[in-house]
Image (tube, rainbow, N blue to C red; front, side):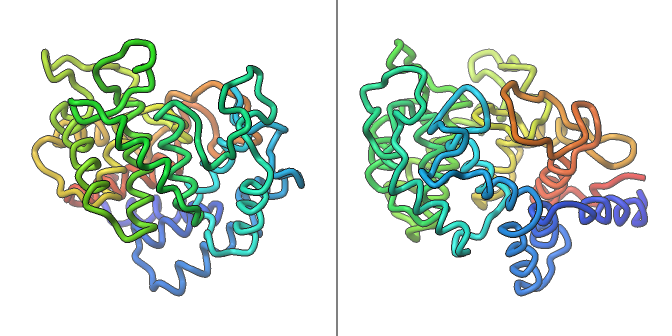
Length: 320
């Protein structure tokens, strides 16, 4: 293990967009709060964040759609701005969210005519996987999401998770839906200071994942989906082991033996150069690429893997 190798990876991460740099400063190099805030503020005016903000039209939409099969629509751009870490208090964020609240409905640009077409964007629609994401985005950007949170609490299944396919007969939870809802509930708790009911629901959802070691069937111990063992960014609605671990880290859950295998998966995906590659690029048109392509070293995956290993107590996570 080499300290020089570790620093070379950190330098590589810092030689990037403000959206990466501020999170490296917060989670890996632990810079003073004012330094982190100054770097974060640049997202609104430079790089990926500024490019996305500039693409919003006066009707509040991106690509003329509230939600589409691609990643250029309002739903996905707002999610990405949240993951980039755009400061919610910035004038640019407030303007963008204001336009969405004032103008955007779920029927905007819809390729089908949903019953909820006239509902405002932050009112949500019917699928908990989508609504969990809307709660996360709305809460992050200062929108009161309590009504949609109440709906999600009522849709929690007996095994502790959620499933988008309940209306089609599903009776057990799915990781993909559950992680989206959990991220939404966590952002909601951060926004309002927490509530006993939401915290209890979130704990049940976390136990659902932990009982399954984040990727194994509870009944047989088999790997549920081998694609979860490779890492993506953006993840969009998809689940993978790194996304699950990064959620637990963000939620302040203590790492225990139930994440040991998942941590080993993270370590196993690290390249010889101490970086993690981009894997499982999900389908859908995007405005631009933030990494160098599938199979190439990914700053996003490397940042997230390093902070997960740090959370789990791994020593010297970058290897020469």
